Image (tube, rainbow, N blue to C red; front, side, top):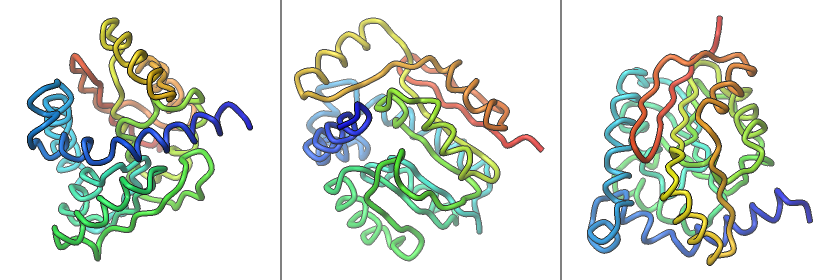
Length: 218
């Protein structure tokens, strides 16, 4: 089995176990939100993504959400009038996403599919989202390239910032879970997107993460 296939299998197992806690963190509920910084980080990231997606005027557009997780960003895009196709490697994450879509009355605007970003057949979309995804792949250039080729207009990437103590803690946590995490530089992600025909239009750099908004040239 190749290294990338091994990483994907481990990521699937890790996020299937994490799914309920991960969803609570996004929803700013109890448990992990009150005990660890993950919830506060997710809340701030969602604030920035809300600003980005509002500015894209998504009414009538199509959105591809790669690594959609439990679906919060997909549903946010759908609430702004987009038709959304979310892809994630973890079945339990997708179960939560589908339930959340039904509860929000948005299940007619979103479709969720199990798949790996590196191997799934990606539909063309006006906007593609990579939120907290690239760090789980060693082959960041391939991930960015695949996403870029599927994108007609805007590519949005939210990526963990390289902070030494955070990197150390996450490496320990992921090693204990027999999963992999990679701390690529945001500058390298921008270069990969530029090589695929995009230009950086907006950058929001926070202590724990960076959000990049890239537009297709021409």
